[in-house]
Image 1 (cartoon, rainbow, N blue to C red):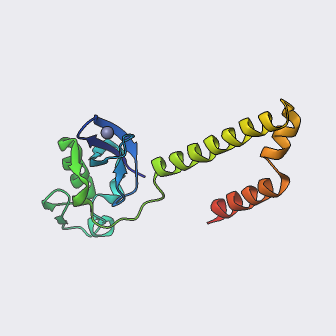
Image 2: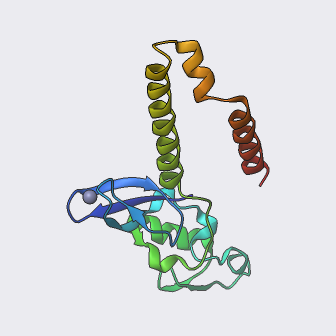
Image 3: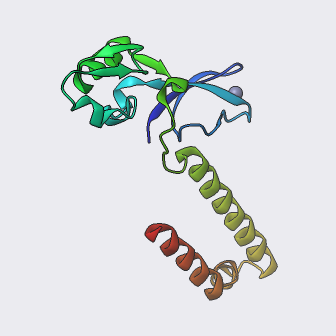
Length: 153
Ligand SMILES: [Zn+2]
């Protein structure tokens, strides 16, 4: 996944790993505008023209907006500009967004902490019981199965 600089109108610029085309949200919930940090972008993805770049007499780079002799030249041009707008990238598909995954993990974690806390209260401070109730074997097995499914997907 490429690394983006994303800018929230309220909170300024922050860095985030994200999927092309997917909205990037600031912690405040507003959609942030994104740009791509060139050094993080893989050379093979500049315009999806890697194979064309091996052709010999160059190709038109949509990323660079000009004809280039090969991917190496295109990459050099893009790097010299420092940043490009994500709309120039074309339709490459990337993996799930890093931020969405992290937010989901945090929500799951927060939910577990809340459950544990209420169980601890319910069982008069019995931590062993609270843990057992918070992490029932069935839920743990389901979680493991989901995790395995994700890993093999
Ligand atoms: Zn914000």
